[in-house]
Image (tube, rainbow, N blue to C red; front, top):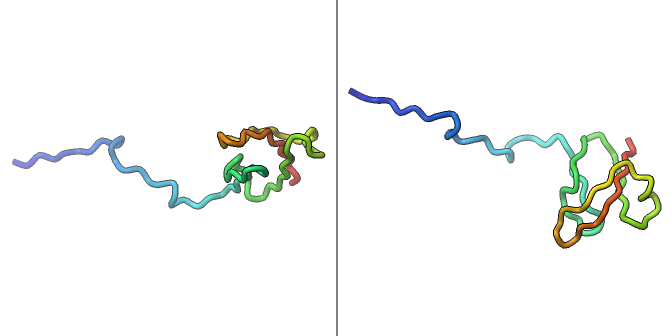
Length: 80
């Protein structure tokens, strides 16, 4: 008499995200070039400004660089 061992759904191997196509572009930090400040759509164009640059105060979004050595305040303006 044979018994079957069933593997629960939670223990099955998950698919890797590296195999999926990327539909977003990544904006990088203009100071330290950290590769993933934010994600944006493929057809979205943006400009980044550092504190003190012309255009920083007119930015649409503000983000802080996640790099522990940089931590710069970045202004992001959506063009299209």
